[in-house]
Length: 237
Image (tube, rainbow, N blue to C red; front, side):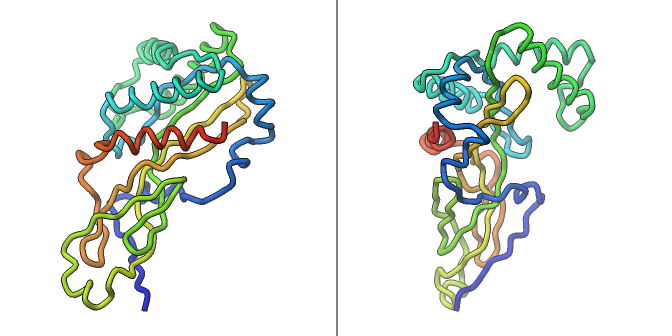
């Protein structure tokens, strides 16, 4: 008989974004791929946004940004790097005295800084659109200790099966927390043109019939999985 594991996790944020499957044609929102690549040639890449719970090192953020820029240029786009937006945001944060600590951040001020930064960027540069990039937690379906989501798959680490393995074998199934990279392209009127994901890695492991969080200091060690996520998120282009 199949057994199913229900997840008990520290925060429900890790299950906030379902890892649904879809056709790559769905990446283009109300626009054809050929039209996007022809009419939106000059794109500004915004700094990578990462859920604080994921504890991503700056070196990994830089690697993802660089990989995305390289891929966009390969597809024929002219790219304004994230440093431009980052500099504008930092200047505006100083103007409104916005705290650098995310736990103490004034959400209203932070939203205003983001909005004004985009407007300032578009005023200074004749870009056609903006590329937003985010790494976020998602809920990934799994069975037989293998999770599959957003174009990738990964075996789930486990320990302490004890009698559970003897009784049920590996016939577990359910949903597990994982991370994914989301890349979106917006036009100057903030209309979404493109949105697609690339799965990165699972964020939990199995302990007998329970699931538990992997220590955050063990995330982001597999450079190949991170590079593959960038490829997957931009493959429809």
